Image 1 (cartoon, one colour):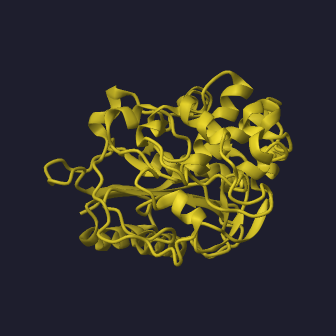
Image 2 (tube, rainbow, N blue to C red):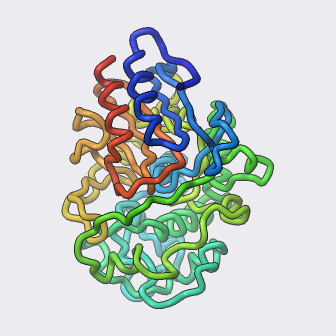
Length: 368
């Protein structure tokens, strides 16, 4: 059975969530509108051995759903005049300009156009656990396509690039900015760089039983996902504590929903303006639309988030969102004025548009 809160008229969401618990380990789903919590429910188990119930305070790793939150931080930095989307990455980070990457703009990097989706040659996987060293190694890479000419999803490298830009622009880490400027003032439970004191409430992940279908394993896809060194071992204390702005956010479903409310409101959280209208417009401005060189989708890339061209985030084309490995997602829909977050710990093989989240989103819209 689900625990938590459902506003009158939204019982259908709870019914869909409870029906789906049969195929979950543990999960949470939340939706907000104009600062009002419509749904905040959870259920199942927080550990693989099924000894610890999923609770209100359980946080789950949301993997690439983190990117939509990091994109908000980058927009905040632009709003404060600390960077411009049209700046070259190399203007802040000269070493990144190696091998013809010197003209790549921050906007293009946010839209996965840098040409460095991963390491095609072997590295020690522990390099991912040393963000400054990993960022330096990424800067030195030769791009796999001419930068700015195509998009190819950067599952991990995106976060090290963005994190380095933020650090150089603000002299603070992206995770610290998120915590100090956004989450703490609004009481939002979302961490990029989760302190050890919070690890006991983190859910354990059950890996999927099959791999995702990418189609032909091209060199960009291999570099991004299909090498033994494509990622560090996830779930360790060190992995939780470091900041990977592309991949290791930890949150409740409500934490995801409240941050993605920025995309539903034109830059506000609970009625308080976080981003100016101009900064928000740049955050959601179309940056690249086409067949991605890594993900097997035609994607509408914005400044670190995805337009709803594939219908993953409800029926309205205006929605903006991002999904994470295993099935998590967050989105905001300015037409409906609603934002939602889904987290879980039993991973599926779906790259985006996990059927579990789609059923919950469909139920949510049926109640609006």
